[in-house]
Length: 468
Image (cartoon, rainbow, N blue to C red; front, top):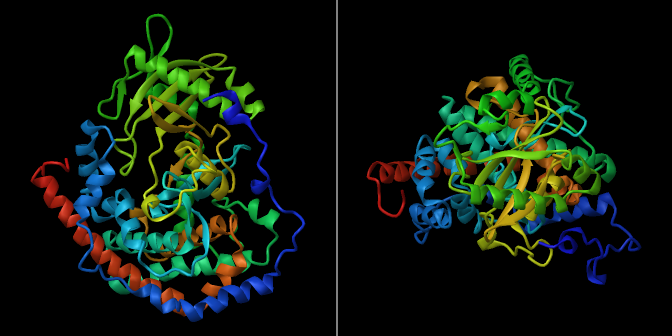
């Protein structure tokens, strides 16, 4: 990757913005979206039944495993087989396959691509404030907004099952996801574009759209306290130790954290040097004040297990100045077989992830960038950045419903950043039809997820050749 290829800002005439053409009014866009109800009734979204030609779920998973590190595929399968919700988290490709033939109104946004309940959480802004937002973008791509919302509703249903919710309670929770999406999209269609791009959800503060239930507030405060303690300095003694020469080295913690050989370490440092060219100049200056102390291979997540992911420890002025950077392989997104990826616009999967994250989050990691190594594409981000996750398994009743609503509202804000909110708001409305429809969808897809999970679990128990 040359300096020119990552720092060029000139655009061909076809790529330049047209800042002269008049913009349509909010009222016109709202009616445009509303009119789509005639050709794509909202009730259609409630239908889910796999057809006779549905590909075997294990075949889809095998295909998604291709190209990953073979030694880690059994671990990935074991993690996915742990529960239906774990399966849903790791099976973005299965759901992408199932979503492809479902009805949409034909309006695209930048998708998160994997917008389940577990992919929302807390992290730090460049100003070191903690916000609540989407936090996983490996599958980001431009596509129908309905796909993100359906994945989110399905995850609410499946998580609700694991939390012991009845069918009626699950239906309420899913309706809250959709209500949150509707509520915020209706608000955002009238909010200025610049204001929309600068909206943040600060956990623990007053919510302008809805009162936070006491039980939810208690969980939020506990997780916020944890996030405030999650930084580079706190991570250092947990994962690294000083050697006899006074250099910080990673502790061995197989299979999660394992050393790399000297050749791989040199290649990774070279990849980080390439990555530096994707940062803005002032952030490159900041990075120039650090030096790589050690690099290790790290296993992360559920769906990401098997990808080539590394953790780099950089040290600055002294032992109180560590910086952890994660170098994570970016695979082709799960929705890629069903959508044009516009490689002419973003020809690098690491850059795709970074661009999607910057587009969808209210504030993004200042260290985001991309690189490549040995024919594989990567993105780079901070490992610890005031991050914490809401423990979904703790949530029941009003707390679970509020969390579902909040995730739906945040998804709406993310979509509104790269689309005309009025079009989606006009189609969704604020009444029951879409909520009822997607509650039907989520319950049916929850059944499907349990069935698919059982299929995988049986295969893992058999140690089925070709799968694990």
